[in-house]
Length: 222
Image 1: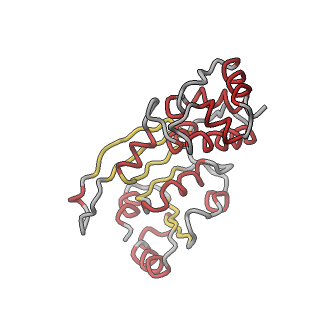
Image 2: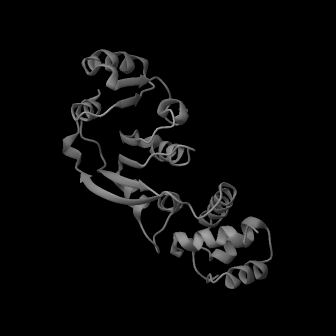
Image 3: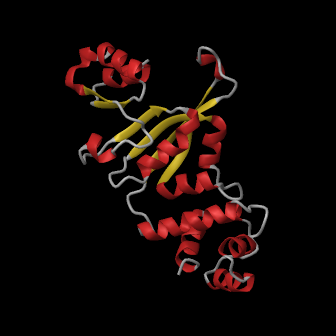
């Protein structure tokens, strides 16, 4: 209903809202009309919206109470955009927030993606009783300060996430076993490549750091 939008506009910012629901879009245009041209509304699905179109290449931040069912897709859409934001401040389900920010040995595929692109931390927990009706889950606000320099090219990033997906699908196995099966390559070859790169082939994927994953992207992919 635009509660967050109204708070932001009240602090003097220029705001572009993204709303898919036609009835809500109509309500927001009318309700937030007093803010004039500081408020613009784009009727699109946030998972697929053209970031360059709504930002016009200018620096921006993303602030949102994200729909929990698509939160991770929306986040990845913006952080991987050519003109990505300087910061995302988003509310998500608490369990998702904890996965986004967990370090090794509890790294997840979501955590790898989040921490590769950003310095991420949980800002605060949002209790159930502030919602009407109260949900069954707690929420959390995550602040993601986007990195300005990524250690991998776009092609290498694709390799890293492809390899990480293979490994995390087999997260009970060692990284050598998981990649050997995923790539259909001899385990000995994978172990040698990992060892030569300074990676312990007996580690499990969730125990590797983001830096170690970037090394894997360069060595195994090559």
